[in-house]
Length: 281
Image 1 (spheres, one colour):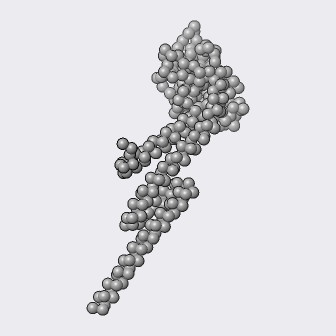
Image 2 (cartoon, helix red, strand yellow):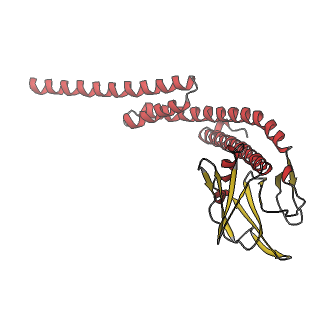
Image 3 (tube, rainbow, N blue to C red):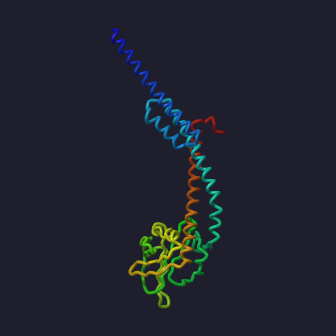
């Protein structure tokens, strides 16, 4: 009888010790999450909250408390994102407006739903003056490069920009679909091939990086044709690259802000549903 009683007491002691260790460990994790939250280290706070459920799956009180606290952390994190985005947008918008003064905004309202920003030094009044590269930026911030060729039939569908040190950037091949044109006029062959998005493949960025160095453009297709890029062309494409980069960055910031605002809206609605007495009737 004494032996049974002794074994029972040992088991009870071990059980109580294990429960105490379980609760203490979970509580320490939750306290750590609160400290990270106070220091605005929200990612670390969420990691500590996750560890409560993972490491202490039977610490039910602490798990409930940590899940409730998680919404507080998420709200603060999204408020921080909104503040940071507002600050960066306010900082960069004046620079973007200044860059846009270097461009002419063009849109044919009869045929186009959106317009494009054309570098002022590239404006030709729609007249093709010779073989060249020209560029522009859509209202969505997407940059394009057009390869214009005048001469004998070339049928090119790819461009390669090379520097003297052997480095180069090469577009992807494009089809004749979309904004690509091949036509003849007064015995001359004309080709206007557009590279945008994926097909542009970093060509504009390469020209921007090497704008002060001699660069050659090679048109590739059924044959090859190589010529030297003028400083005016390099300057215009570099400006287009800078404008596109700035517009896409600002668009990304505005999207991040909108997502954060939606997350806060979701958390507020969730709180109202869990506490219907807080809803104003």
